[in-house]
Image (cartoon, rainbow, N blue to C red; front, side):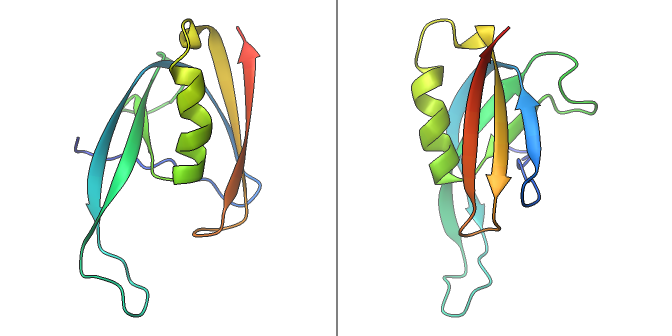
Length: 106
C-alpha cells in the first residue's frame, strides 16, 4: 500500500472529499508512548479521490482512525457512494480525536 498519505487534520479542521473508490489495508507504525511495542500493525482505509479534489499527488488519503473508518465504511458499502461529497471535521487531537461526517449529494 505504500506510499502512505495519512489524512491528518488539525483540531476543528475540516476537509471535503469526493471518493471514487476505496480499499482496506494495513501499515506498520512505531509508537512512541511509554511501554509501546517497537512496531505495531494498524488497519488503514485508503480513499481514492476524484480528479481535482487534492492539489498534489497521490490522489488518495489513508484513514488510520478506526472511529472515522467505522463511520465511512457503511456509506462506501452502499450503491452509489461516489455520488456524494464527504465532509469530515476533526475534534480534538490523537489519540482521543473524534470526527463528524456529513454526506452531501453532488
